[in-house]
Length: 457
Image: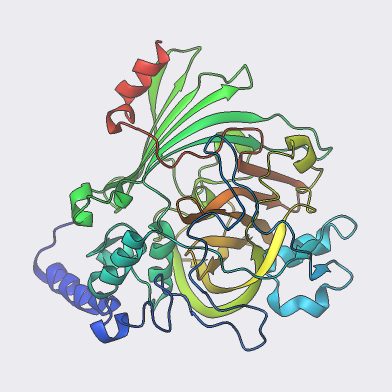
C-alpha cells in the first residue's frame, strides 16, 4: 500500500474511515445461510416462480450418475426440455429479461441467432471452507486505497452483502475458482466467412488468494494470481509460452507478463499488458480487461455505478455446450457460435455499469454494463459501448458446474464484434482433457526462469 503524509495522510484516513463501512455488522452477516445463501444470494425464489429457491445446490454427483476423473462430467439435466426460444421475431416479449448485448445479437443475426431457455436450476455450490471464509469476510473485509485494493479478506468473495458497484467487482475478481488448476483450452477467432484456426494450449493457474492456508490477504505480497500458458498447436505457434502474474493493487505495478517464442529462444518482458491492450490471438476483438471471466483488472479508468438487481437470461449449466460429443466444427459457426447447444436460464444478476472517467481513455470501450450472477459472483454477460454510444462488443460466459468439487465457474466465453461480424471464443474444452482442480503446480515455474527450464527441454 502507498504511504502518505501531511494533508494527504489526513485525506487517506478519511477515505479509509468511509470505506470501512464496507464491512457489515455481525447481525447482518447472520443472514448468510438464513434468508441469504452462504455466498450472499437471495435464498428464496422469485414471486413468479420462474426462479426457484436455492436448496443447497449440487455438492456431489446426483443419484444414478457416476463420474470418471478422466472424462467430462455427465449432464445431470440432460432430460430438461426448453420452455421457450427467444428469437428476433418474439424478443419484444422478453425485453425486460434480455441482457443488452443479447438484444443486439438477436437484431444483428435475425435468421440464425436464438436463445433456448430452460428451467432455472440454482445448482451451484461450494465447499464448506468457502462458505466459512465468506461469512468471515462479511464482517472484516474493506475496500481501501480508493478501490485499488482490499483488506480483511481471504479465499473467496469479500463482500457477500454488497453496498456498491466496487464491492461487486471485487466479489467477481476474487470469487472462488479453485486453488491449483490445469485446463486444456482451445481458442478460435473465425473470419467473416467462417474460416478459423484452433489454438490449443495448456493453462496452469494458481489462485494464490484461494490457498486454504492463507491467513490474510496481506500475506500474498500483492501477487494474487499466477498464470502459465503453453501453446501446443497450431504448429507455427507450438511451444510459445506466456507467464502472467496479477497484482491485487496495480497502482505501483501492473501485471507482470513474460513471453517466450521458440524461434527466438528468448524470454521477453511484455510491458503494458492491461486495460485496452489487445490480446495477441484475438485479431483485435478482445482486450486484456475482458479476459479471465469477462472483466478483470484495476477499476480506476471508470466511474462505477450499481444499477440494482435484475432478472436476466444468462447461460447456465452449460453441460451440452462443453460436451465431448461435440467437435469444434459443430460449435464454431459463421458470425456467432452455434446457439443450439447453449442453455439459457433465468437468474438474478447484479447489474454494474462503468463509464470512462474524464481524462481517461480506452481504445474500444467507453461504457460497459456487466451482469453478475448472484449465486457465483461471476460476470455472465456484458455489453460494451464505444465512444459513439453504439455497442462495440457483446460478451457472454458459459457457466459450467463442476459438482464433483463442488464449484461453478465459467468454461468458455465469447466476445462478439457485432459490427465486424466476427467473434473470439476462449476456453473451449470439448476435444481436450477435463479440467484438473487438484493438480500439482510449483510457483517457481511461474517466472522467466521457469519458462527457460521448459523452453530448453
